Image (cartoon, rainbow, N blue to C red):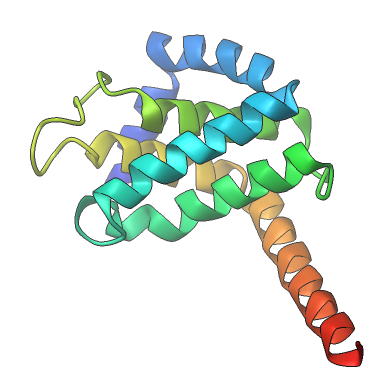
Length: 148
C-alpha cells in the first residue's frame, strides 16, 4: 500500500507530467510503441525477474504485451487516457535519472515499481480485459494448430 502512495506522488509530479505528454505522442505511432516495448523488455530482462523487479515483473511484462498488441492493432479496447498512462509508466521505467536513479544499487527500481503499482491500480479493468483477451487468443491459436 505504501508503494502505491509513493507511486501516486510520483505520478502527480512534474517529471511524470512531461512523460504523459511524450506518451501521447508514442501512443499515436505504432512503430514508436514497438520500439518502446522492445527497449523496456531489454532493460527489464537485464535487471531480471527477481531482485528489484520481482514484485512488479508480471505487471510490467503485461503492460509491454498490451502495448505490442495495441501497436499491431490486435487489441484496441483501451481508453486513450489509460493507454497514455500505461505508456508513460513504461517511459518512467526507462528513464535512468528519476526520483531514485536506477544506478542506486538496491533502491534504484523502487520508484519504478511504485509507479507501475499505482498505474496497475488505475488501469486494473483494462489490464484484466487484456489478460482475458490474450488468454482467449492463445487458446484459439492452440485450437487452430490442433485442427491443422
